Image (cartoon, rainbow, N blue to C red; front, side, top):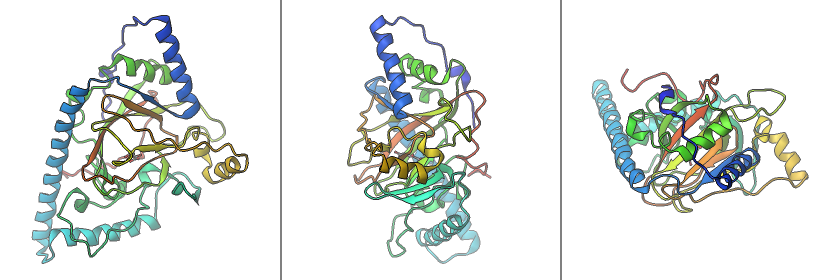
Length: 333
Ligand SMILES: O=C(O)CCC(=O)C(=O)O
């Protein structure tokens, strides 16, 4: 994963006392809830421009992968059409991964109104429904790979059916929109420290028809016994307005602690009635959602007819290495 520290420039501080107080309150809120929405911090025209660029990269990679799949099918002399061949493969891969899942979390449980709870980290997220074999879809990105890091590539991972995370071409300077924003960078540095680094930049696309993900953390606690301060966080930059229709990222506020021992902590919180309601913020273009790597969250159903692209920037303390979320295998191998 490319670390582009040079883009994390120090901002000059010309804030008023009131602004300083407001920002400190925001950081305190982040520590309490595990997440924060910062409204209207990025220029909307730049966000709109990046949507075009990001989706062009996504479509370019999709074409590369479809061409790769077609030539593999031609080599095998397969008489299956591309879509049905890849559906069979996807089903086999999901079954394999379910048997041998690689999550570092251990607890699993089933929620009630809130969907499925797993103690799995995101890298092992593979608990979605199998594709409908009778459904004839036009070959698309989802046809080209299985689900979960074992079946995907360092350039793109299908996290859940029709929900992708793509680092491909995200290192380009034009995508450093968050690093160019002093308002966001100040908050990131207040949370993680001045020496924080960017450990990943990617595009998350939830395609039309993508379903709810399981609740998960993106990474583990670093201590087995106590909650250390946040060591890693994501900044989500929606490239379209995120609404109840195209599927907000839902967060379980105050759940950083729970992620350590999910089943037990959930039960305790239910009994003590301390479980906080789910937040599913509608985040407009120009606003950002920031959340602790450990907080429970999930992408939700995209019931619209359009993809919901979101840029993701992962910042961390300099010693933290994330080895869980992307494989080493390349599309171009
Ligand atoms: O798509 C989203 O809103 C969240 C995605 C996510 O949490 C993941 O892929 O791990």
